[in-house]
Image (cartoon, rainbow, N blue to C red; front, side, top):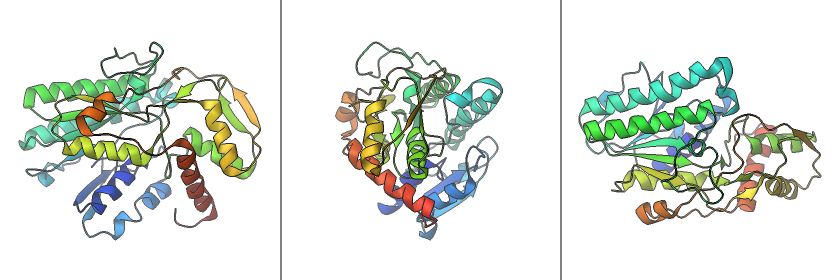
Length: 314
């Protein structure tokens, strides 16, 4: 698994270990956010004899020797963040989202085992769409450099699937939240501000629709996609019931029990007005059923961030 020390990757690592799998985790520990949190994300995995962590750059790391018949490959490593993808840092998105992804597919193709691969894509490939739920068949319309690089990864997946008969499915993640969330992500920032009794900075009017999806539901969908025989090249993984950002902020106020002062900021370039997953295909193909509702998920993330701030192991 690539990106095993990250937010979603570490949860997937724990899930696979719990179900008895042997996991080779690969992570570059990129400086996008702190190494300390990433190591903490793997605190449970490190205690497992079936877990091995390799640190390295996917573009140069030789890990193909670990592949064998039946090995499943989860490619979650990426350069995240819509806002950071503009300007001089774009080269990092090209390197970590396109070149590294090509290297993963090339390594699996060279091994000759036709291993099942799940590629972590993003709802950012949709960009602005007509009102309503976004089906996989919708025409991609990324409005950020980040979204463009994730879509490029999907195109690479299709090319390698056709040329080498690799069973690859691209899972489009929708606005994931929960414990271990990256510090730059909205809910992490909101909870941190509430804890410190600082104003919450909200981009835009707050009327943006977001299909907030709890991390365990995403992980369940990824595992189901890897273990299935679906021939679908792309699957949406989201809650399928979007809410206004302002409603989510009210939920955070209820969970924390604190009155929140909101400071409005201009909506940055690349932020769509809505994300909304049409999950019918994933339900039919892999039995995907998201279970965690927003109030419950917010409560879990709040408890994790309180432990994180208190200095105990999250």
